[in-house]
Image (cartoon, rainbow, N blue to C red; front, side):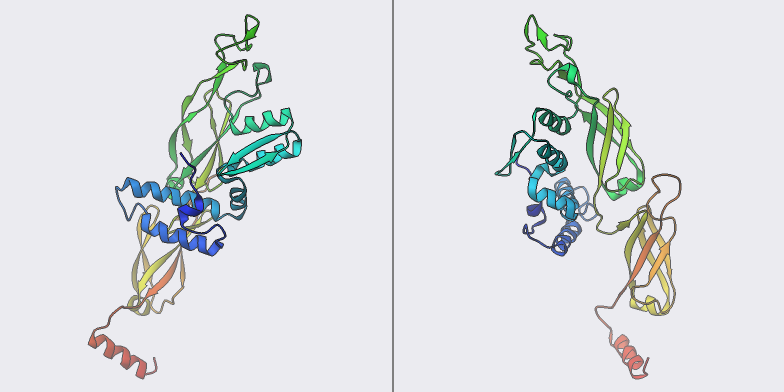
Length: 317
């Protein structure tokens, strides 16, 4: 299956500005959000693709790596580290070829990094402590509540035919091809705590597979902007409620709450709702939700309403 082109996913050119990328994402997120298309699995899948593309292209450092290495951008650091070590390695992706200088040890190191979990080298005697890093994508709602994910990790165990030596009767083992280990996938249940943020690295037990870390990517949300443990959103307030006072319903990640709007509330006024933000990853408590007032003007006036507004205008109010 061909790799996804993040620029095509968002419908922007490769030289698109950060503003154009943000606008394209918001337009697609509003159209594809599961709340707008309940039960539509195709749209839900497309929504996840859009979020994954935006998560990379909205980050200048990630975008730079993606522009150079395409689908392998997440391994840019390993590739560039190998390049500094000397030797020879060629890599082809997306119709482009890359050449890196690595020596034999560097080459082993790069593949140890890219394909962790299948043994640390060509022979069992060269195995290194296994450290697996697994990418996990979450919605903001999942990051708020915490979630358990079932993961299948690639593991390895000594070859039963050669007992991990790689040799059988003076020749290479035909089962492990001399590597001394064979693949043994394992499934584990990974508990991701509430409050994780984009870029969090969560350590979990590997069930005998060594150290396993989850590298968390939290998708942007079309309604909430996250800043640390605080959330920012907008709340629409009718003009008359802004002038005379009233009540607005504010959506949060745990449901709706009522917000009292004082008389003469100005457009852009921000209200702080304590304890309705994201959970603290360490310790107890939650951040705040900041609701910014967006005064909504009436789209149509009755004759009486128009007359009243004209009277207000003529009175100098």
